[in-house]
Amino acid sequence: MSALRTLVATASALALAGCSLAPRYVQPAAPVPPALPQGQAFPALAPGDGAIDAMGWQSFFTDPRLKDTIALALANNRDLRATIANVERTRALYRVQRAGQFPTIGASASASVTHNASSAAAAGSGTGAAFGAGTNESYGASASISSFELDLFGRRQNLTRSAFEAYLASDEGRKAAQIALVAEVANAWLTYAATGDALAVARETLASQEQSLRVNQRREGLGIGTGLDVAQAQTQVDTARAAVADYETDLAQAKNALDLLAGTTLGAELLPATLGAGDQVLASLPVGLDSSVLLRRPDVLQAEHQLRAANADIGVARAAFFPTISLTGLLGFASQSLSSLFSGDRFRWSASGSASQTLFDFGGNAANLAASKAARDAAVATYEGAIQTAFREVADALARRGTIDAKLAAQQSLADNATRAARISQSRFANGIASYLEPLDAQRTAYAARQALVSARLARASNMVTLYRTLGGGLRP
Image (cartoon, rainbow, N blue to C red):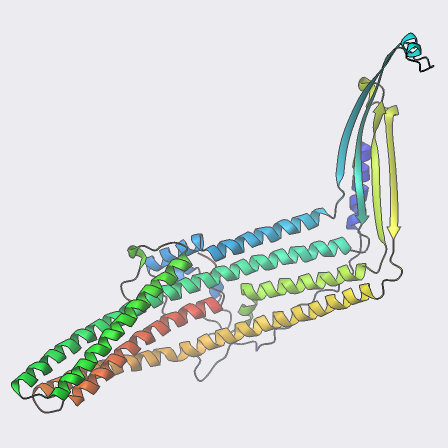
């Protein structure tokens, strides 16, 4: 069996000793500024890398119900499950391609027994030949190497490299999908909370408008009010009823979106009662000035692995211009006695090789090489585009982060003063100082201001989630 080991080792060494015709990979320069944007709407950033991708989502999100909802989604979301299954499939395909670099070894065994009749019996049968009586036996055992391509020009090596990079790209795609899912669940959960707050404002407004309607109806009955006041109050009630119905629909649809993302029906214990001030996430993040952090985003790494795979495919296309050399081998033992089958004088072996070369293919190989180079150029553009997209997403999130606190403060002041003005206007109307048109307009302004405050709080919380996601956070628990 030492001869078999020698043959396999020799074939494997020849397979792995081939040269690679793929061009040397050079990482393209990032087509974005070295620093994240500063000044005007953007917040001041500290020098260096904030390393937000090292912050786990369990640390970033502070509400236990939101954490449990995210964990449930990571375990049950069907899209994420499909992505994980595709990663495993790509990994298996890489292992299949890698196995093709080595010989395939087969083994077989045979035995036969032949019984000959006596010479008299043979003559009586009319054969005219004499055979000695007895039984003849033969045994054999062999191992073979199937037709195996010697990878002298790196064709199989580059095919394996391309499959490996495709696997790594799919794994980075899984990471990107996980980060996106964490952000989607968080935003859907926060949206549900904000919708609940908006519904509460609408219901409070409806109750206030119904009370105002009753006051105007009594005033009309006493002769100090008018039918116009009653009609205007009724329109406000109807408007508030419609708003309540819309927000009830929005809340139900927000729950449906959460259930879909979580992959199961969420219990009431996981749903938020209110958005409040939006403190279910961290109030600030240690964002660094260095834009190189974007190169660690999974979607950017995915594009780079795809670029590396395309680079290896060029080596595969170049190898097609050179001869294909194949090797086969057979070794084994043959004997008429099972007891002496593996004795030294029974050993037999054979080996053969072949080479083939395309003489004229009407430009097929040249076209394949050109296509591989074009695919590599497209992969470069995709990689650079992924970096630019990441930079723009972070810049947009920072622009919102730099101004959202000022907007929230202004919106809070607007809501407080609009509510106060509505109370004063209602008092002026009740004391006969003003017409009903004054409190009517004040109530509309107050309602709009309160709803806008809810939206501003949601925008602030969602902006923090977006900033966390675009800087690569959300992968670690």
